[in-house]
Image 1 (tube, helix red, strand yellow):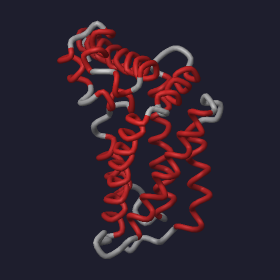
Image 2: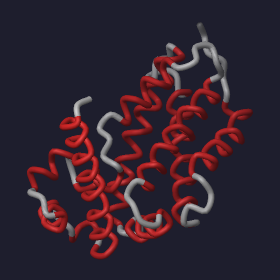
Image 3: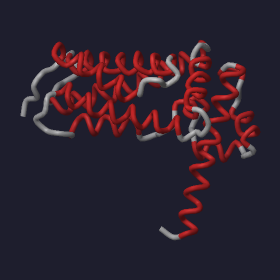
Length: 209
């Protein structure tokens, strides 16, 4: 990578983090419905067009905005560690995903616990809860599709992928709520790893090769 390319990447990353910080600040202060993309862009001193270069919506700025997250989860669940038990693979994949989420919060700068407290305040907003529910529904679909592909299961006739996906996303949602409420005193990936370990005995099923 050239020095110029490296500088561009650093500037892009700095803008990405700035937009997330501003969005979290404004939504925690005013509520999701009372914050526009234009206001986020203005507070970050960029144009709305620049905002949309980084995030498709204001909600995406709050949730991290990785457009490939669902696709990556689907592919990893479908193909990682062939022959291994389903819950063990889910545990590894979702723990890695949680680590990435937590790292993204740390990269915002400042006190991670403070950012988590702001997220907790923001999530009390009913509009944001609805947006988060839609986001988690997208993740749940990706997990179910990955499980169905892994197990060669037809989701129209086999409820197992959907049931396990719903349980997995429930684990993630509960752990993230606890994590935010605790101000990050317990690592998110540890919470999720422990929760999936507890689920393993009751939900596992062997893969059919």
